[in-house]
Amino acid sequence: MVAVSFSVFKEKLLSGEKDQTIRPFSECRYCQIGKKRLPLQIYWKQRTKECEKLFDAVPEEVFPVWLDPDAFMIYLYDRHAGKILLSEKEQEEIIRRDGFKSREEFFKFFIKKYGRKYLRDNIFMVIRFRRVENVTTT
Image 1 (cartoon, helix red, strand yellow):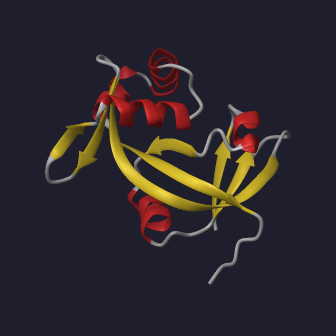
Image 2: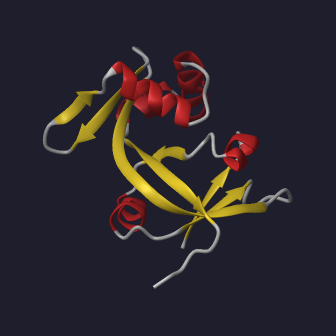
Image 3: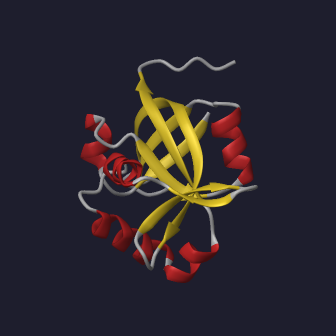
């Protein structure tokens, strides 16, 4: 199982409105979640006094993206083709499923958390998940 911790949007996680997260790309995490489809443990503020396991989940979809902090655009990232601009509808779906009300709110959060330079220089991954009651591990 792979632990995934959150510090914002607890109510949206619990209600199912937020069913994805965007994290810096890691080959190891991408393999664990995207390829092996290891079950997820969704935590609230892990490694703090407020730590709480919210629920178990299974990964539904994992894909790399590049977030443009200057144009407020989201691109699919392909290691061979490079950056491919997602349609307006696809970008809005990512923003909404991540818990944000607007493109501006989404990018302000990521710029504050990571900084413009880090966003420009790095690839992220969208991890979509589905809550489950009982996870079976193999």
